[in-house]
Amino acid sequence: MIGARLLAGVSRGRLRSHFEHNDGRLMHKWLHYFDIYERHFDAFRRKRPTVLEIGVFHGGSLEMWRDYFGRGATIIGVDIDERVRSIEDPGFRVVIGDQSDPVFLQSLADKYGPFDIVIDDGSHVPAHQVASLTALWPHVKVGGVYLVEDLHTSYWPTYGGGLDVATSFIEWIKSRLDDINAYHSREPHFQPTEWTKTLGGLHVYDSIVVLDRADVQKPSVRKTGRPTFATSNGETTEIELDGQHLAQLALVGSPRARVRRLVRHPIVTTRRVVTRWFRSRR
Image (tube, rainbow, N blue to C red):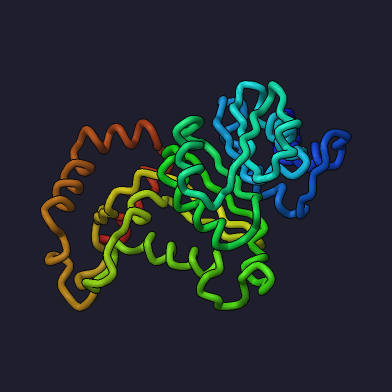
């Protein structure tokens, strides 16, 4: 157990350690990013993921991802600067193109997708960030993640941003919060979209947003267990007990189910039976 904890600690700090001991190609990172990376990328380590990073800079982060995900990973770097062609090596590929060009992005997805992870560390221009995400999102695998970083530019006028500026990435992503909850809408003009059906989660941090790709099913709700009170929400409890609920109670209340619970969880089951008995005596 102690060894496992120590190894877990090493794993959580692997990217930061790589950065601090980097004597390879240049990297430029906000330090709080590393914990976010590890939180969302750890599950992909040594599972041969396909990783796309927009924005190559000097190539340091491509070396970091190769080290972190293992040599079985397919790592593609995208940049508009022709000079980065020279840094390609057997551990990763480099493609030259404009992240705001949907035709280029489609060709990228056709050749290298679908992707387990997409990291946008490119131009940092909000319009480009939205264009890349919109074009590439259909090519992220279910269970994959899309991370956009350096979103502080959404608050910088020099990048077309600013507080409450409608064209910033931050303002655009706020609408995805509505999309996630659209199945619960009671308004005709607010209905589920493709984002509702594919966006499983949205994680917002200082300068970073992470989107989880999922196959989202329409939410369903059920009740289980026995009522405590005779009325609920102004109505008698019996009205709220639909056929599915009654069938569940009958199933878990069968002698066979009771014995099975007692064998598997003797202490919890005994405590529950005793508590129910005392409650019925009141």
